[in-house]
Amino acid sequence: MQTSREVVWNTIRFQGPDRFAHDFPGDFGTDFSFTGLSPGPDHRPPKGADEWGAVWENLGGTHLGEVKDYPLKDWSDWGSLKIPDVNDPARWKNVVGARERAGDKFLIGYGLSLYERVHFLRGLENTWADIYENPEPLGRLVDVLAEMNLAMMRGYAAEGVEGLMWCDDWGLQDRLMISPDKWREIWKPRYARVYAASHAAGMSNWLHSCGYIVDILDDLIEIGLDAIHMDQQENMGLELLGRRFGGRITFFSCADIQTAMQRPPEQVRQYCREMVRRLSTSQGGFIPRWYTDPQGAGHSQQAIAAMCEEFLRLSKERYGR
Image (cartoon, rainbow, N blue to C red):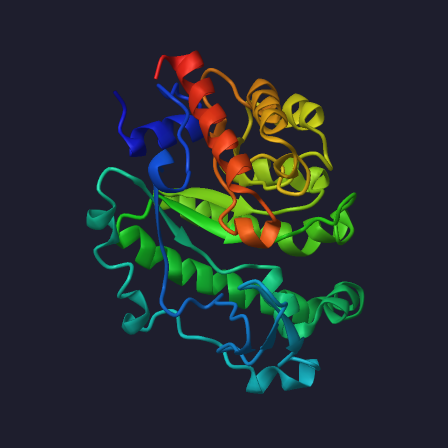
C-alpha cells in the first residue's frame, strides 16, 4: 500500500499509483497538507490594505474581496512600492516543522502569483495596457515576483516541501485574458525560470488557473508544470482536455464548480465518471479534490457528498481500494 506522499508522486509522475490520490473534506479524507508563509506575500484580505498597499473591499457574503485602490497607479510610483521581505524569519514560523506535522501526507507550499499580484498593484486595465505600452517596467515587476518566488523556494525546499502551488487565473469563460503571444513573450520565460528552479530543488509545480486556458496549457506543460488545479472544465470540454492533454499533465480538479456541482447528486456522479474516463490514465494524471469555498460557490452538502463518494468508488473500482 502506497503512502499519501507516494501515491501523489506516482500520480504526477505517471508511475502507477495504487489508488486515486484525493483532497476531500472531513471524513472523506485527504492526501495533502498545505503550508505557507505567515503573513504570506500574496495574502488577499477581504477588506482593508494588504502589505503591498493594495486596498481590498469585501464582495459581500464571502471571505473574498477585490482591489479597489492600487498602489502602483503610475510607473513613477515604483520607488515607493512596498515590497514584502520574504526572507524575514518571522514569516516562516508556520513552515518550520510542517514536514513533521504533515506525517505521510504530501506537503504543498504556496507561492506568489506572477500575474494576479501584478494587476492587484497596477489594476487590470493598466496591466493590459502595459503589455503593449510599458512592457519593460511590467517585465521588471514580474521579475521581482519571480525573484521572490526563488527566495521562498529555497526556504520551502529546506523544510521538506514537495510541491509549490501558484494561483493565477488566466482565463475568461471562452478565451485567455490576454494574447497568447504576449503571454509567451512576457510571462512564459518567468514561469519557466521558477519551474526549473523548483524541479532542481526536488519539488513539483502546481498551478491554480480557472477559465479557458487551453491556449497556454501546452506551453505550461513544456516548461515544467506538473499539475493543473482546474475548477472549471466544461467551458473547455472534458473531451478536448482529455484528448489534448491527458497523460501529459495531472488534473487536480473537482467537478466543474459553475455547472456540474449545481446539478442533482446523480448528475454530479455522472460527471465525475466522465472526468475519470476523459482525464485519467491507469498510470496517473488525475487527482480529485473539492472546492474549499462551497458556500461562496453555492454548492450543497448533497452535491459535495455525491462527488466525494463517487470519486472514492471509482478509485476502488479501478484499483481495488
